[in-house]
Length: 144
Image 1: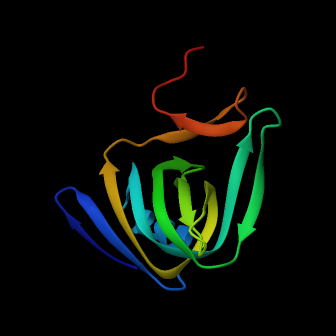
Image 2: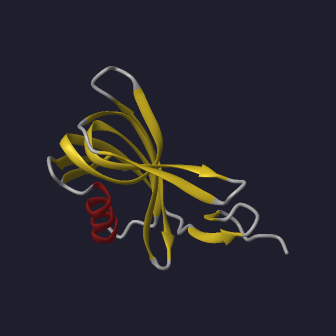
């Protein structure tokens, strides 16, 4: 991974074979980032996507092992259990020009991945939401 910081944002380049989440978590720790927004394009492989079923409060997960065009990557950075936590959704283009997408659990860079990261100065934690069944952003204290 290489990156530059200019005009209050980062431009990040990941290299073929790098683990997307491992690199992003190292980046956030090294740069002492608290929270922010992430956007990107490129190509991915060894992808695991998920679809959340609220009625069961579980993710249906599926692996995709080919190479895919990374058509859209959107996410955010917060903290969970005192560590950087990236929540990312993606749309991937397949070789037949169809698309798959969902919650991104894991991925490796297939060719390159180019990301913008827009840092925020606020520390935003994730907290358990019983109704939804997930750790959600706690932007302001929950009312009791």
